[in-house]
View 1 (cartoon, rainbow, N blue to C red):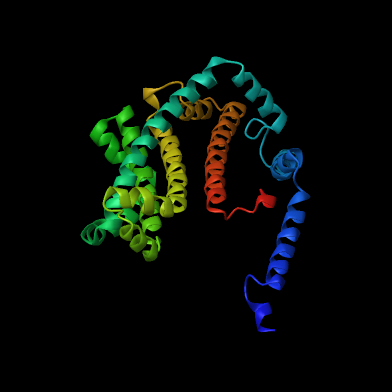
View 2 (spheres, one colour):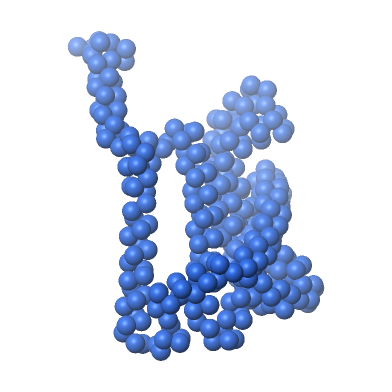
Length: 294
């Protein structure tokens, strides 16, 4: 009787084999690539259809005149017209260039600041709470200072984008490092990892999920800050997406305005999908991703 409860006995091996067979059988029901793609696609398609249907229902209800809130068909035609012309693509290139520059710089600042604060008690006591306070400040609140310092220029937008994104990234790094199990740190030191090697081989891999979450949140803050900046500092560019929003509002061109908003939303969805793919890759490498539920 006692031998049956010990791992490695025939009975225990049979039970483990049975569990493995059940898991493999469950996974085999969704092995086709088409089924996996459809399982991840149909909820998005259904949500899009519901949103368009609700939009059309509001238009039919007549709460606003058609020139203020046009229907999906009218906006779709305007979006196709914008896609076929150069103005939308030039504006997107300008906006994405600003977003990339600001975000890359924010990543550098956030990673260095987060690692420094996470590993230094003095820095944590001095500026740890300040980082969270900076993260909670609305991006729009920085623009008066940015305009005073840099006038209506690219530097003003860059300044606000960095202040919007870097604190979120730093907090993600701090959170990730804080939750690294002490046992891993002791094991790394016992194996000879010191200084940069300890960060490279122990702390960074263990903190990676939280760091990726901070990077994703930092992108959201930087994108939101950039859109606010382009709406306010509109005079420096006539092609950016934010400038097109302002011009369409001033011209009372609702289809143009809504089509530009859709483009901004799509860019956000594409970036979110990229971060989602990175997150799944990390979880797969860690062995915490259910292969049948991908």
